[in-house]
Image 1 (tube, rainbow, N blue to C red):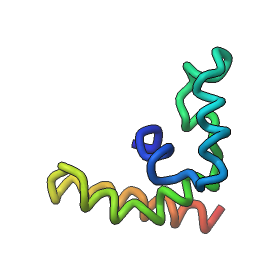
Image 2 (spheres, rainbow, N blue to C red):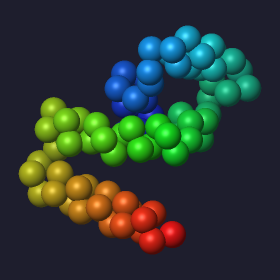
Image 3 (cartoon, rainbow, N blue to C red):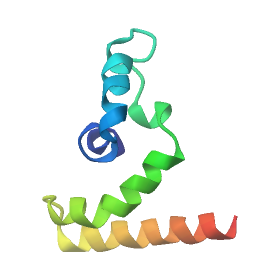
Length: 80
């Protein structure tokens, strides 16, 4: 989900040229985006997640499950 959302929803305009260069580089192009981008981008995903989930084809129980797990992760990060 992160890898699909990154180039469309999570990158700032000034980051997009760098992303285009990275995905063409044979050393990095085969890597998953979640292996290249850090916590800043994960936090952006958390902010955009409600909007992205509402536009998805996921069932309501699946969306509720995802929101619960993200909440657990955020609470874990707050404690640690």
